[in-house]
Image 1 (cartoon, rainbow, N blue to C red):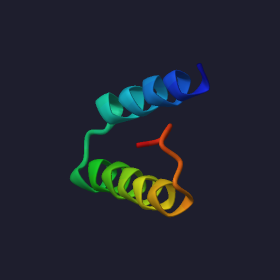
Image 2: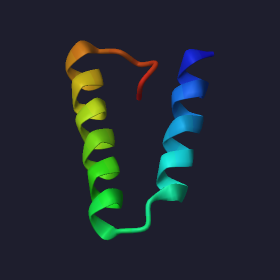
Image 3: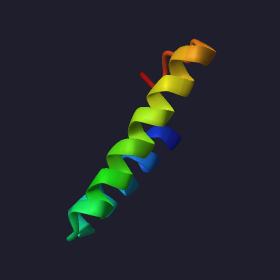
Image 4: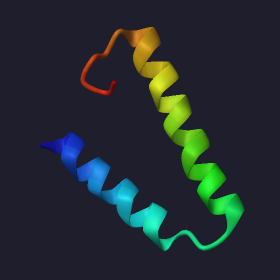
Length: 46
């Protein structure tokens, strides 16, 4: 259930982003989380 909370928060932040830099920051953070999940073999985050 915590993953859903994080997902909803990410959607909210993405909808609130009005500048390109804000959107790029969110995308970069998502890519970093994906890379960490792959390294940790955490299939819940993938």
